[in-house]
Length: 63
Image (cartoon, rainbow, N blue to C red; front, side, top):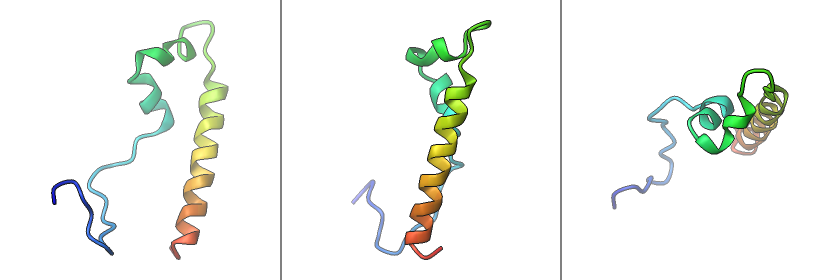
């Protein structure tokens, strides 16, 4: 079926986006990037959390 991944098929087809790229693409998060009131600390914290979660997931998968 289209859109499904076969068991054992874990090959990525695209480059993962950073949290910043993801948030910038959505207008509802524009307040985080406004000049003079940037909240890049929150974006960096979210990226650290995502990186830690990803590392734990890979560890659980045996990678």
